[in-house]
Length: 244
Image 1 (cartoon, helix red, strand yellow):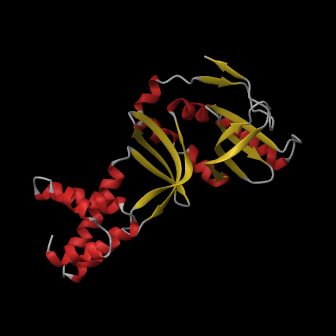
Image 2 (cartoon, rainbow, N blue to C red; image 1 turned 45 degrees about the vertical axis):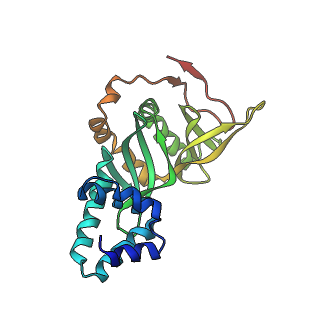
Image 3 (cartoon, rainbow, N blue to C red; image 1 turned 60 degrees about the vertical axis):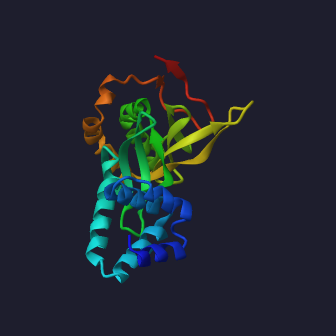
């Protein structure tokens, strides 16, 4: 890294002296470069962009393009599969703390033109995803009943286990997958911010991801759902849960 570039990064507060020393402690230029890029990404969306601007000012525009391409590749490579279902919402399979998780999550692009996850979404365990697959027909039927208003109930819910519910209601034309919380000493179950609402077309697209998810997650073949829930529950009522 040139002195001019190093000074530019330090002046803009992108790297502290401590972070700079950590990078320089690496034994070779490749390791130093990888840690620099990783550090820039952790420092926020403006840090990487400022670094790229400094490179352009030094006449290294081609290097900027290579960096952005490699950043996108490294970001995607962390995931087994990333399937778009519309509106920057993706079904993503990745591993976290030695566990395979299947996310339904909203993504957005950062300044490096890389898709990064937002807090809008939910991560399902494999046994929860299996129950979601099992409930497809019932959820589709619930959607039809809500559209036709034949049940007289405002909402129908399906418990995926661990407090995660799929809900369909006639006020909002969506399929909501969300963590809910039972208020102690009461039968009231309230929604949390951890979840995502899918329009009906995105729900259809989500169903279309099942084969690809199965292909990328062979562990599903040997996973047994922890719970079996008998039918949809009425609003504010606990689903009947039976351990397998």
